[in-house]
Length: 182
Image (cartoon, rainbow, N blue to C red; front, side, top):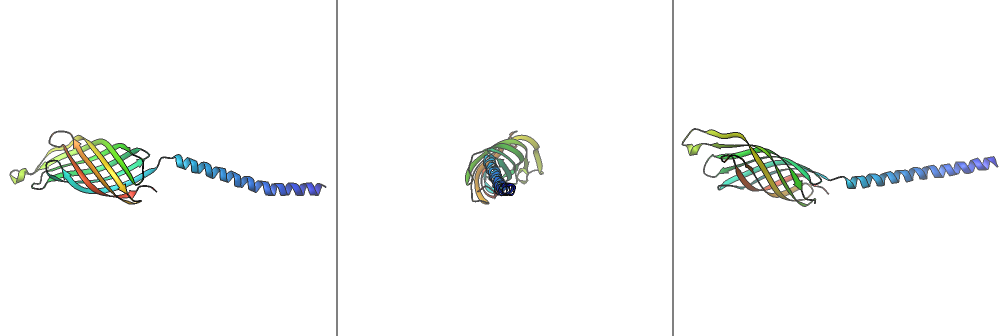
């Protein structure tokens, strides 16, 4: 009788322990999946674009962006230059803002501080000089992004608002590469 009871106990433990372990692993996997679904999605991308700027100028912009959920942060270099002279407005900026939800199409808007400058050669009538070298300005960027998993296109506006000689704005179509999500 004792052998039968110990054999039954062994069978119970032999069946019960693995099923308890499988159940515990299943519960843990479900909790991990639910936790991962609640985590805000992270995205990262870089972009390079050309367009037009204030005062009949050619505009260029390059930037790197990171977003987590609706928060977005970016670093951006942008410049505008007239077709007929060497005058140039440019800035380097660190921006923070927000983005809408979505993987394939979303909007990003951000503001921040920029080191802005205006360089002119006075249409060759005077010596090349810088005006407002590294003046502090308020930078802005707003983009509409449409993408596949890795490549994408953005249409956006950007610029710097500061002392009169360093302020400018532009709009550009950019090629974006990065991780935009599933």
